[in-house]
Length: 432
Image (cartoon, rainbow, N blue to C red; front, side, top):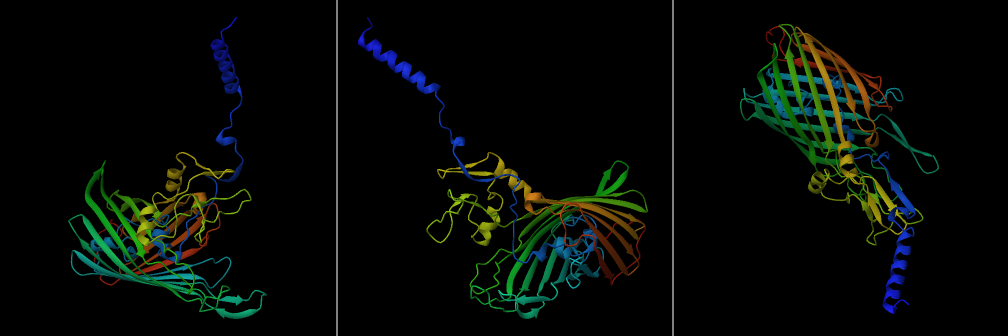
């Protein structure tokens, strides 16, 4: 006969083994009420996006890369610090880009830029960017016409660049931004619409070395960065929340090979990252509704609150992506390991291009721009050409969209530059 203690021990062991053998409830077996995968769209939106449109056709023909190519008047947009290394004393550039030309005829972007060398080490520049959205008819909720209006936006810049060493320069630009999209019409919420205004600055740097040999060729190696549109938020109504403007980090290298006295070839790549908050994923209940946090907002399941100051938004933009999120019925949240970093990397756009010059007078260009499908899906090839005379230069570019419809798809853009201090050029010199 078994002793009582042995009976208790065996009974406990049997019950334990039986319980262990039964299927245990796991977190992943809970009912999923919300899920975001790495295929879901999560674009970053800002006010006045016209500020990051490529305004000129030289870079426009090189996949919209330009932060480290040789300087010209359009460096005002790409990297103002390059102006200190400009070869000419004074240059003016005028560009024109039709917009959505296949749909409307009166939308366009015009860009006027110029620089002046103060001496061998310093330069100043200025530019005016004007974006016209054409004529728009405003209607009320039943479709009755209220009035016609022509929305416009513009930005005026001034810049200063100085060489800090033989091969490195720094630059700063100041910008006033004006955006009038409604002409003062009263919104449905009762707030009065008003033009949006903002002030911003750019901080940039440029390094170049023309004393390089690669194989049998003389070469020029350059690199640059530009943090643009660091500035105040913008609002279009008296009651609306203020929105970030497109604070953008642009950086990248360039390599120019001097093939012989008449031929040169430049390779360049730009990396772009918007330094503004990414939209978070909000917590949902079992009915699919977003959960209220009790303070006039919503509970964030993953990511960060985008309603922050400019500095917090800039620094937080490198780690605020929500990643792939699963929300379970009991309110618990699971973020896939590594998905936050993966999404952050997807927010970096890549532009790559090349430029060929013959006798410093005729240029051919090509490039490619890539933006991840979940961040806007802008993907396109570009082609371009340039012809330079003693005083005048003319450039043209053409964009070929590969995925979604780009506002500039199949559109020819034109830039004309005027060099008011044109001197004798030696054959085979690098584009300036």
